[in-house]
Image (cartoon, rainbow, N blue to C red):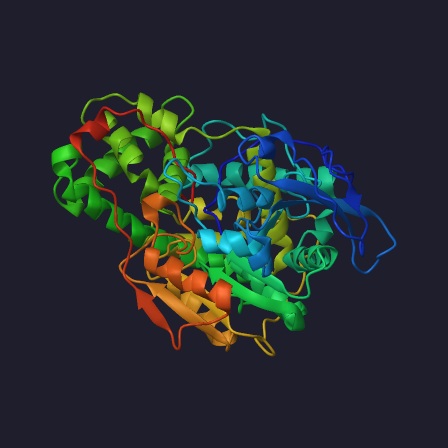
Length: 517
């Protein structure tokens, strides 16, 4: 599950094939792979793409349809081929077709996130989920709907404005995407995934799911237990509450605060580089002063809302710690806000708004949400006593779901019955999908083995970039994918290395890595 993203902008809903040259394949016919859309083909030239037609409503298979974009990185050694390996990056939303490229593309050193033996043996399959990216993407608002900067999430004076802002956004989803909204839940995404499996001619579904992808994988196990092959779930969501997504939001706020405190300790360790303090309290004081300044007087398009969203996003991975801290130091020590404003500025692309739209469309329909504003505000006020992220985590999610224009589904009950061995990964300090949720899912999936990354607060363990790779975890996951062999019992691996900044970091160009790099 991603941290709440303050993204805006629009694209209209269309229930038509995406503009790609690959031929669409009706259900039951093999997929025909060809060229990918340019935005996939350019960064991932080894991917091929196809489209698959699926029902909008699985209860009405002869009714309206939509097309899913499916991507493939073909197995490099056909003599060793074991089948297809589906991958999902989380979200919900954000372009799953690209994930097949991200996990298979070599970096400048030749390193790939999936080990070469896996790439030899599997066709790696990604797909954009219904309503997302190239699969009939939805949109809910005009570019001007969300102001920049957005209202301060903690200020009582902002509450009416924020409730209206997100209530109107929900209305926009109903107006622009109403025909599709009832059918965008995870249950139908799981059914789509099984249709892709069948169209590929695969008897079993092999799968690696990250973050939200663990919930998608769990739902698939409940709907199609006899078709589950080798499955890795990494960064695990607790599927047991009836209000799955509301509870997921509630547990995030204190978890992000704990992770942020770990980050402050890292900054203090390198006071000789950043000059922000040599204790957690000193660094926190400088952060609080900065936040108060931006809260009092926004700096261009960046106010308290944007700073908090950025700080939360940086907690997913240490990949952005050097850049973010350099920008913070430039402001606190040197009085130059330019790098911090650039780092925290909202992404206002059409693609970003589409992520916001599908994120809300899935979580609002997947399960129950509180029906009164007072319940949200009471819970946020309670959590605000221990976390600076509490009020922020109300928007969107609760802000939109309170007024969502279609009813939610009853969540699929995850039973864990009739399954082969499943491999789970989680860091002990994951802020987005806290460890307690992994333990809950592990208990439900009785055939699973849980691998815990110790001394780590990164979100997700397996298949990371070289900067945050955990070699021991990758070896365990690779052995399982190639042989089906699980560790004999739950186990743990040491945490990965954290970045070591040097004084040169303050002079280097500041860039922002992808969220889960």
